[in-house]
Image 1 (tube, each protein chain N blue to C red):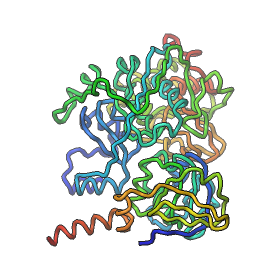
Image 2 (cartoon, chains in turn blue, orange; image 1 turned 120 degrees about the vertical axis):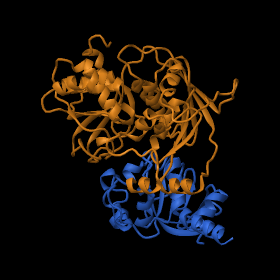
Image 3 (cartoon, each protein chain N blue to C red; image 1 turned 180 degrees about the vertical axis):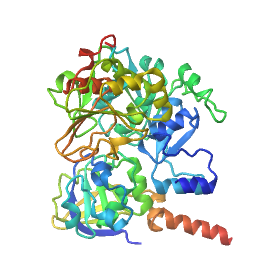
Amino acid sequence: MQTVYHGPVLVLQNNIDTDQIYPGRFLEIVDHKEIGAHCLAGVSEDIAPNFPKGGVLVAGSNFGCGSSREHAAIALINMGVSVVIAESFARIFYRNAINLGLPLVVCQGLGRQVRNGEELEVDIRTGQIRRLQAEQSFQGEALGEYAMSILEAGGIKPLFRRRYEQEATE
Amino acid sequence: MREFAQAQGLRYHFDVNAGVCHQVMAERGVICPGQIVVATDSHTTTHGALGAVGTGVGATDMATIMISGQLWFRVPEIIEIRIDGQPKPGVMPKDVILHVLGHMKADGAVYKAVDFTGSYVEQLDVPGRMVLCNMAVEMGAKTAYMQPNQKVLDFITPRAVRPFQVQETDPGYAYAASYHFDVSGLEPQVAVPGGVDRVVPISQAGQVRVDQCFIGTCTGGRLEDFTAAAEILWGKHIAPYVRLIVIPASTEVLQQCMKTGVLKTLLDAGAAISTPGCGPCLSAHEGVLAEGEVCVTASNRNFPGRMGHRDASIYLASPATVAASALTGYLTNPCTVWKGGC
């Protein structure tokens, strides 16, 4: 499983809610690629068309607050986000992202340092974050064991399939 | 969902004729004190009003819970929000929770459980309790709880679909933190556009012309909310070019509003009534905001784009403030127009 990610940064503020990540007017869409095309439309409709594959989001506190809509995590994944770093995450978004296989790292103070477009290296197993241009490191929180096991399986659906297939064959 | 419920033979399937899940589940006695409740909606914290531990989950989460009967849960730290005092007439539970949110901020309780206590909470009725617990999620709370009082037991006992046991908070329990609010003398509150925690007393909100006024949702769509609006609007008509959208949270609420005459009063005053559901709260239908429009709403979120266009402005307020604003066409303190209510 990939645990180290490289990518250019998009910086976001505090309290980015799921209505901004995925506005309610797009909730009828079911195709995941199309959902990704409207990602962060509540912040700016220019973000998704120009987002580089593997890009890293760096946000302030309470990222993903508001509605429980799973579209928020689906949209981020399908826009090409490799990992989201924030000072804190709202809990339902946190669960949705991990369940769908989107890595999250909690790290304080990073958003005030990094600039849009600069390259970061993120190790989700250790929580280590490196600014490649500035040669500066930040220590984020490593993910918990259970969350890591979900990510390793590629999400909670593959994890459950494997678990119940094993039980069926035992 | 309908097909799934049918295929699985699920007993409690509520179709499009029922209303908003949190109101319907409470009315039908599915939620009982002492339960752990998960639902695929962030406002599941509402059920703390009935002494249950309610928390929102995602759709994939719910599927794994249905398969396994289990859930990966972090046991949250518990904080106390003690609310004492008796607010002035005309100041509704919505004003109280907006006031609390303004101080706690949108991330003030992230991943924590909130225990609401204090003399204000102890005497509060079920609808008022639902308003406070509902909006606890707007400060990031995992769940909210209130020790059930007699009013809760009177509500749930004839409705409960299964036996239940009321849980008691341990005497002398040491909370991770305690916050105290005295709501005596509180004036009506509003959250100004852009964030649920951008709360000011209505006297400081300035002169705001409104295009739409909305009363409804799991926060502000109960009989008490429409009764307050009807008292303000009885025998009067809303301002020209203003829309008043009224959406009862459930069919039971709609029927109560018909029986008490509240619905006729609101219709006569110029309200547009829609069938029970979430309506424009999440820009679903009937009152989705256009660019540049201003809405004052009894619902729960004023994020950019929440109710339609990103450049529409949303003010959160009590149902009384919404009704008073519909009457004048401007954001209005209900106490200036509510005879007998204030």
